[in-house]
Image: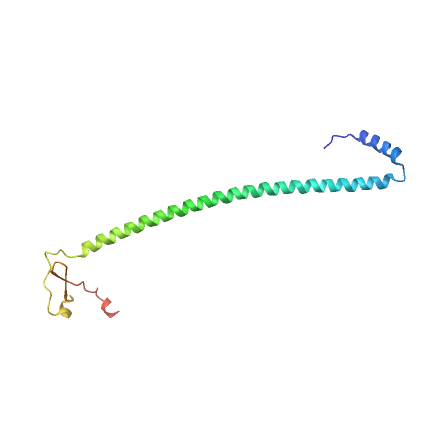
Length: 142
């Protein structure tokens, strides 16, 4: 880290022995060791906090991308559902139109509705009578 050679450490130790003295040198060395350990732990904690913040920032970006993709997917699904619904409605209206008999060729109402399977005629707006649609075979028992 500081690029200190072994010979420089020996010179510092000899100067410390002379200046501090042999009685207090072990206590000072122990105190310096504890301080150096605390410094290393503090630096490691700061590095870990920075890494966590970077990962959280990346996760937030990823969350935003996933939410954008999900909302885009949801809107495309909703649009497809609306298209299908409008298609079904148009087919239903076409089938209803095809199922109605033309107004000119309406057969007269039969007097016996049970024998013919046709319900009594219902008057329309123009005054013409059209027969009611009968139930499908087998559904009269339901």
